[in-house]
Length: 154
Image 1: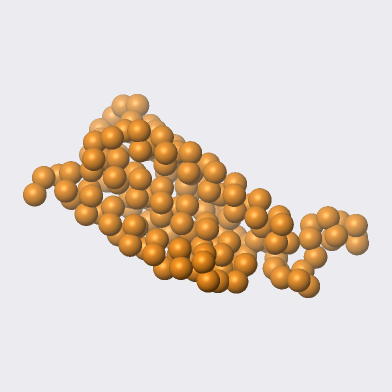
Image 2 (image 1 turned 120 degrees about the vertical axis):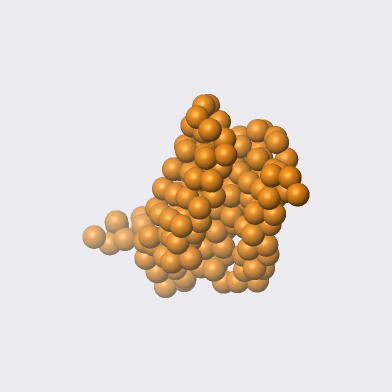
């Protein structure tokens, strides 16, 4: 077993965790779908980081970088239309524990250099985005007021 096989085996964990999240996106309530979308962006980026090392393709790091920026942004845009952002402990703990557990071993294996700096930036963006979007901003649903309605009401 080569070291690339180990990285690819490690990539299977977040990839397998995508299955229930994708199920939630297809079958859940709008609140559940938003949380699952946020979780899939985290898990997808973690899978891409590990696959980049396993397959020896640094271009996957660029995809993870784009996903680490657009994932939380998409969550915030959808939250705006739904009238609030639901809080999620699962997303928060994935960002706080899962991202460093993925990025730190990759940094150790990569060694100092430009690729390590890119990994650290991606890890910081994923963690920050996960923390911001998992905090929650209020109620969702038909009875919840949008931010514009709340501002007009005050």
